[in-house]
Structures are given as C-alpha cells and as structure tokens.
Image (cartoon, rainbow, N blue to C red; front, side):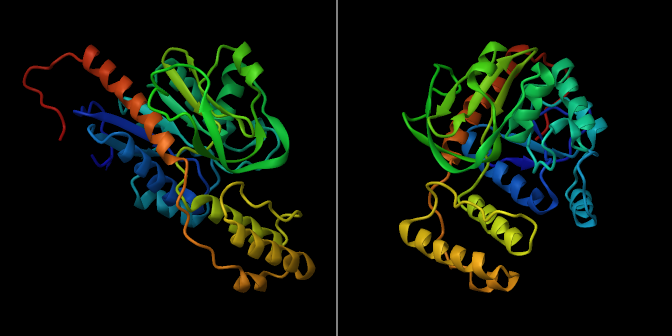
Length: 325
C-alpha cells in the first residue's frame, strides 16, 4: 500500500499510521532522502496505510535553493510537529561538519527535539548521525573516529531475538557511510539492546526502552541502489576541486571487478592531474542491483505493526467522528 504524503493537522486521526520524517539532510539530498524513505516505507507496509508528513529543524544551514524546496514541499516546523499527534517519527542524519557534534549549528534544535520525543513524543527511529547525536544527548555516549571511512554495503546478522528482526534472513546487507562509530560495550552499559551487527561495520540496529521504544540505525536504512555511487562521485569531485585532501575510498562490496579497475585507473590519473575537467572522463558504471533496503523494510514493517497494534489497543471511539481517509 503506498505511503501518502500529507500535511498534518492538530487532532487529525487516520486509519493507519501517522508518521513524521524530520529531514535534516543537506539541500542537495533533501528530495532523494524523502523518496528513498517513502520507498522503504511502502515496502515495509504492504497492508498498512502510512500517512507521512515532513518536518525541518531551523538550525540546519540552508541555502536559498534548500529553503525553496522546504517551502514548495510543505515542510512543517517544530511547533507543528509537537501538535501533530503523530504515531511515529523518523529523524534522519545529515553531513557533519564538526568533530564534536555539540559544536554543530543544529545541536540546540536537535536536542530540543530529542527532549520532546523523550517527554511527550511518539516512538522514534534515528538514522546514522541522528543516532549518534541521540545517544550522546540521552546518555553521554561519545562516537569514536575511524581510521578509514566505513563506506559501502556490509554483511550483517542478527545478534538478539526480537520481533523487529524475526523476518530478517541469516545474513543481509546494510549500507554505511560514516567516519565515526559507537562501541557495542558502551551502548550495552547504558541499557541499549543491540539487535543486528557486522564483523566489519560493527553495530547497526539497536534499541532502548525509554518512555517509548526508540530505534537507532548506525547505517542508512533508506539508501537505494544508487546512493553510495552518488556519494563516491561527489567525493571524487570534491577531491578534484580541492574541497578535500584525500582521494576517497571506493565503497565496499558495491562495484564489480571491471568497474574497480576502471575506477583505479581514473584515481591514478586524478592524483597526477587533479583538475575538475577530469570528471568529463569519469568511467560509465552499471546500475546497481543490491542495496540494504530489504532488511530495512523488514525491520520497519515489524515496527509499524507494533505501533499499529498499540494504537488499536489504546484508541477510544468518538461518537459521530470519522477517521481520515
């Protein structure tokens, strides 16, 4: 059943689930992130209608194009979020600029959101940087810098029995793109339950019961088959124009052997010539077939079922008042 984008109204009720997405991604990824999440949500809930509304935080830096996108796509602000009566919330990550998350310009607004979720908000899921920021704010758990970027498709498995992971296969792929990691032992010491993990990428999905059950993804559950390739292309371009010093690593388990050889040739040329005009000669690569979205759809589907079941158990009929379409 398709997810339905809508603008929420205070007191609005729906037959399915009312889900908010707080989209913190940079301007260039705003649209693709929503499309990716909608794809996962639709795959996760074939028998459940999910009404999706979009929200933004004022502390995330935006250029004029980003501000126009928010206005043209009915993004709502924090005051509307707190009054929406949502059943669930997803908070996306963003591209960090500072080593210390508390130095990011969006940190005050993000922690206000976290405090509201903990005090009055619905069950929530946090992806990538949002997961790092949430555990830092809630329990003081610091992320640890990695020697090399955790970048690519990594094989994972479940490490705890839970309704959220019952539908997962014995092994599955998850996309990661990050320079930092959370330590499993530190999460465990603070009451977080680790549900899936990878020998190479570490902890992926973990949860904690606070006022509601909160979910945390260290990876990117929304990434489609093309996203890692687009990020790699972006970083190559940044190297050529001087925005970054080191040439980027190729994402793991993503390109085939022939493509890797072509990319290695291009890398050697880029290190010698380092000019943005080289992008005209970037190798033509095949469309990808694999992503981590099937696993994400299985987890979110189980999460939506939990929320829908709880909603039915606690709902009280109102005489003469119908549900939204």
